[in-house]
Each structure stands twice: as structure tokens, then as C-alpha cells.
Length: 97
Length: 257
Image 1 (tube, rainbow over the protein chains, first blue to last red):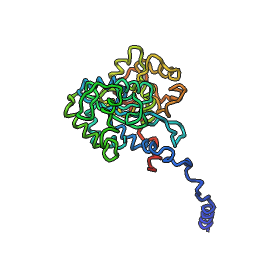
Image 2: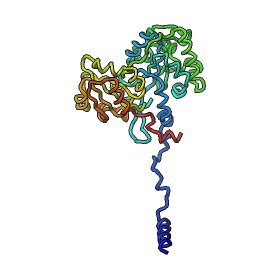
Image 3: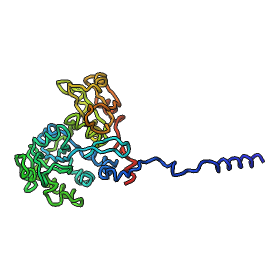
Image 4: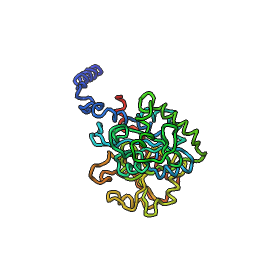
């Protein structure tokens, strides 16, 4: 008898518990991140960043030129214009190309 | 374009036989470096315009740009003809098309390596940043933390430099951090950390959120660790292991791809 009363109480409690609604979904920005800056959203994915790290980059010609001369290696120089974007996750400006 | 190139296995493998440089027009110091070698600087209509678009060039080991036709060494000139003869993106068939970006570059790389076979020598160097502007740019864009090395007028402490360039340390962390030598001018925001680090120690900074427009470069710098010297390769390795930041700050966004 006591078991039945406990079970009924539990069932009532479970039934009265708030059901998940759309408002409980994790909040995301109203803006579609792909519309915010679609190229850079793609570029800054973990997968893309991991691709950068496959290459041993140098950033100043002084070090690079010395290494090239010392090891007989030719050089590959890639460049573009720097800019900044608003990070769709944090809303803060972030470097981009 | 970058995506097709860097994610290409053959490009990554061939790049080990090259000295690879990545830089940006528009970041203080970097543009002057590119102009010095005749790579950018001529404005006008056409493929030589400095726009948002990425481009690349090859150099011989003795720092002469190579033309894309015949791979000839040339003396760079700040003219559109000169730049068009060495820049690939808009002037070489297939160099810009998504389907052929990687194959065009790797075909050229193989030909260049036939002409300039690298000597079998250790090719690891500390990839020092050009300056604080490029350090903040690359750390922010590539989601890396900054290894800040205090340097007096005489440069980096020799014992610290030896530990940093130790192959075990560099192989493990050359891709994980941005390395910056701090000159004798220490920014106010970093003065306390740098003094605590001592001349043979290092400071680890969190990835910045971007390059500030007008404020001090280091205004929002967050110091993660101050590690006074002296350092051995083992102690540096331990520190860098602990502070490395894996790529993927936007794992949430990348899952929506």
C-alpha cells in the first residue's frame, strides 16, 4: 500500500514537471553564422585550423631566408590582405584574411 | 583557396622540402617585407591589385623570385609585369580554380625541387614572428597561444634559445604556438609578467580576440603562465605541453558545416 502511494506521488511529480520547450534550447545568435561571414566561419573551423598546423610556417623573411640558404630549400611564400571579422560566437572582432 | 591547399596531403608532404612563409598585406611590418622582395606594391586594375585575394610566389634558396614560366630566377621589380610573372593565383591556369589549386601548386613544387634539391639538414627553426602585430594577428586567426620571450638589447638569452630550439620541443610545439621575441621596449600591460619571468624565462599569453584598432596591442592580453628561467628543454616541454591550445575554438560552429 505504502509502495503504491509513493509510486503515485512520483508519477504526479513527473507529470507536473516542466516539459522542455523551444525556450529551453541552447540560445544561439539570431544571425545565421554562415550569413555573418560564411567564408570565415568555414575557415575558422577546428578542421581548417588543424590544416594550418600541418605546415611549418615562418613569418619573417630573415629567419626563413637564413634557413633556405642553410638547407638549400626553396621558399614558398603565401600572402593575402588582413582584415577583421566579428566572431559569430563571441561577438568580438577577430583577425581574418 | 587555402583550404584546398593546406588540407592536401601531397602539398603538406612537399612543403617539408620548402621553407614556407605566410604573411599578410595590411599587418604593420609585413607589407614592407613583401614590398622589399617585389611581391606586392603596385596598385591598379588587374591581377596585381592588392585586394582580399590570396596569392603565392616561389623563391629559390638564394632568395630570388622564380617566374611561373620556366621557373627562372629574376630580380624583383615593383612593377605589374614583374609581379605578374612571379605571382601565381591569377596568372597561371588552374592556380585559382578549386579543383586544380592543389595539383597546380604541387606540380610546380616538384619541378622546383628537381632544380633545387634540398640538402639533408635539419630544417627546424623557431618561427619567430616579425613583430607584435603579426604575433597577435596569427595567434588570433589561427587560434594559437603566444610564447613571449623577453629579450634585452642583446636578444634572446642564449640558454633559453637553445632550449626552445631543441628538436624535441620544436617538433612537438612549433605548430601550437606563436613565438614572439619581446624587444627592450616592454609594454606596460606586460611589464609585471616579463619582470617576473626574468630574462631567461617565458610568458604564455592566451589567444587574443583580434587586433585592436587603436588601443594598445596588449590591452586585453591575458597572461596564462609566467615561467621564470633557467629552462631546460624538458622543463620547457612540460610547460608547453600544459599550455597548448588545441585547434578548434569554434567546434560548435564547425559541427554545423
